[in-house]
Image (cartoon, rainbow, N blue to C red; front, side, top):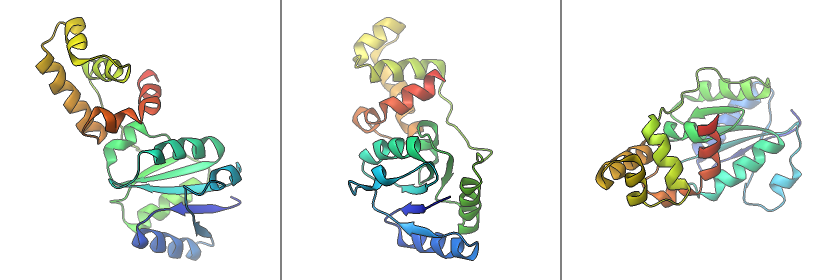
Length: 185
């Protein structure tokens, strides 16, 4: 790898990974994903580690999608359910110990996939309801097409949002392209 960067507001995670990486002769540099030239400066030999927690702005998902197209990306997620809708070379959770996170960094550097990545399972009805919601259909329209009561559709939709780590259509809507890609794969 040419350059390895870490994007996080969590000082413990940042300093811990930087220190552990130095012991493995890996240099990790702090970076700001919002800096206009950061993503444009990345090359295929670079790697970026991004920590996403509940305070992370939704536009970070757009940034990570752009980063993942340019170089290797490791996501450290506070909510493991987001694994379902994220795309990266390596995905792990922030609940991992620093040595486990360092193992994930080593996998990132080796150009391999981290095995045993969990994915959230959506039922067939949940996938249909999510797809139609993301296509702008109202609950009443979805209920009519699926021959269900609107209350049942609301319940399924709430379950989907819970599984994906969101609480509303707007929270999940910004991730529409990731969700739709994952559902059709």
